[in-house]
Amino acid sequence: MEKKDLQQSGLFNLRPPRGAHKKRKILGRGPGSGHGKTSTRGSKGQTSRAGRHFYLGFEGGQSPLIRRMPKRGFSSNFRREYQIVNLSDLSRIEEAEIGPALLEERGLIKDKFKLIKILGNGEIKNPLTVRAHGFSKKAQEEIQKAGGKAELIK
Image (cartoon, rainbow, N blue to C red; front, side, top):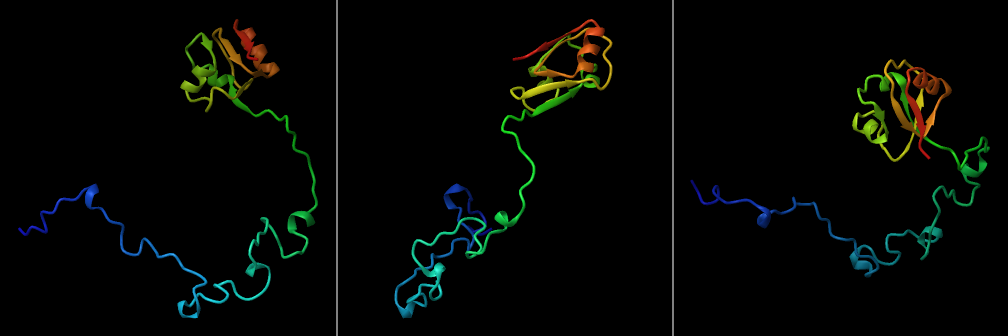
């Protein structure tokens, strides 16, 4: 075997592949450079000027599409997004007390710090104490009918 085959590889001799690093284009250095005079900006107009800046959606002074489109509807700043859990999901849990941490642990919700709402889809046989940020009327009735408690988290 040759020495070349036995050469050790590691962080000390890693190199980027050829062509991975391109040289920066140097502008405005005379006609011989190929990037002189107008410095690859073309001639005249807004794009050739210094300090040019367009906002996103700029259409050369034409009224932009976002302003031509009709605006409809309403989006509330106070909208509350709930993570939904059904009674059928809760009936599979063997614990007596169910809270956000347990629901997250079992994979029924994604984040224990976000709002949780219990809906009445399904049935509960055993008495449970359920802690959540919201309950539907049916869910609350079903939990109480089974002998459990529906506690609101503030």
